[in-house]
Length: 404
Ligand code: SOE
Image (cartoon, rainbow, N blue to C red; front, side, top):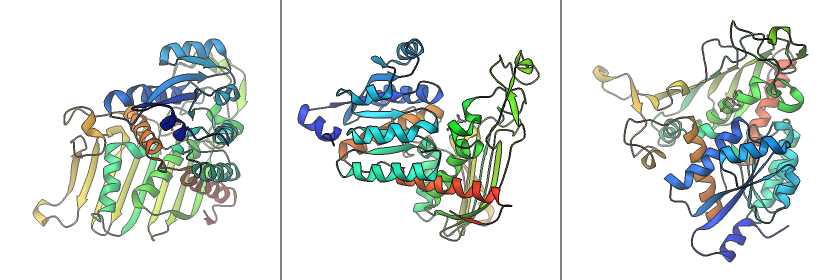
């Protein structure tokens, strides 16, 4: 295995060394990650300075356009060439799940740090193989993180802090929903997220994985077993076509159709390691809910509730408040004392979706400089994959109880 990227920096340069990033993919996640790599050193004092060294996409023209738009210095069309470059220290994987394993294993073996989008992989076996490779690589100072970015929403980091401080007491209930509606129209076109071969699963892995990771991270408890239902409401969709949106179907209604091979929605109950009970829902058919990633945690002393559609707010109930003053408090998590916020705007000005990706980069860069394990690690993400697999297994067997 090549010299680890971390060792390379401290031998090569003094002062603020560079962290030279190579990103694979340039769609929605590529844009969010590019924004984070560009922005992090401009708002946070980082021990290593991220450089947007190369972006990789199979179509050179499209990748070149993306490089110009997102601020990348060079272009590759084969991820193997990107990994082979000695001016790349970290590989950022922003491609569909069926590519994660191959790219991550090659990058780790080449001594490159890795940031891999969620879910980690499309199967438990792939995820476990990646987690084992990451453990071996970490022994050489090569580090890996999985991009469950919602952990770095200040209000949700505050929720975890409240649980760790004991403000909620013993955790009894978790209620987690991730509600979107971009597939509510049957003429919304067939995209890679609806193809099991590429995505691994549908709403369950794409958005339900976020709820699973958050519920476990905030409570500090892991899901031990589930009972689940999944369903596909629309079994085939137009291939391509200019989808205009609800009511205006463009030419999509007349396009040829292809099969949807993943779940449109997943619901499941869960038992946690500390005795808590959980209820989960992930759907892209909750008409009117755009990105309602919600979680409520009830404990013996207090509760929290959060909805990403009001992402700067954490609702907190302290059961020990005086009776005449008791009730849910609406905490605006934009005080300098709240996680990450102090580096941005004055109190009350708020943060958005993209800030969580910047916070993710900040924590990863600090981990690399310190040689400390990034979280969520590939092992953390492989455990989420176990839960995803248990949900699918339960749903395929009359919702019978399935250990995770
Ligand atoms: C699904 O539409 C999606 O883009 C997820 O893939 C992301 O992980 C989530 O952050 C936003 O919604």
